[in-house]
Image (cartoon, rainbow, N blue to C red):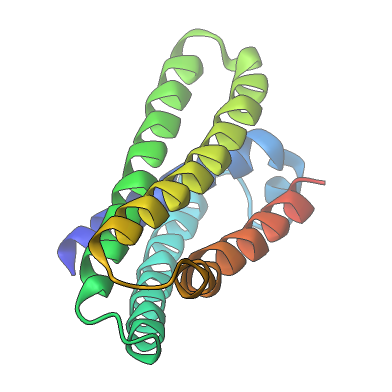
Length: 167
């Protein structure tokens, strides 16, 4: 649980940084850009991401039970969580570098990094499909359906919400 909370803090930090870069005027109007309000958003976001992560794991567990995959949900969940941690780490490191050195270039770098995170996650799901295809004696159609229900559809919905927020 502590690891999931740390991951939630990382994702929330990257999200707050993206909000400051892309929606600075919106933050100034609704919440403010002072230290305490940004820390409050960060902590609320960390607990929100922790809650969503737990819900996602329970959802993967239920779907895995329905598809009779055995104990594959644990490795499935943490395989994709590693992708998210790696992507968030890159986003935070590049963000930190550009905050200190070239704040004006941060917006264009974040566009590239966020699209890279999106495609990296999609490629990671494809890699998970290939790994699970070799480990499980399961029809490819059922495995594809399982991954679409468990990963792709929620991820694409979340991506659509992020794109709508960025408009």
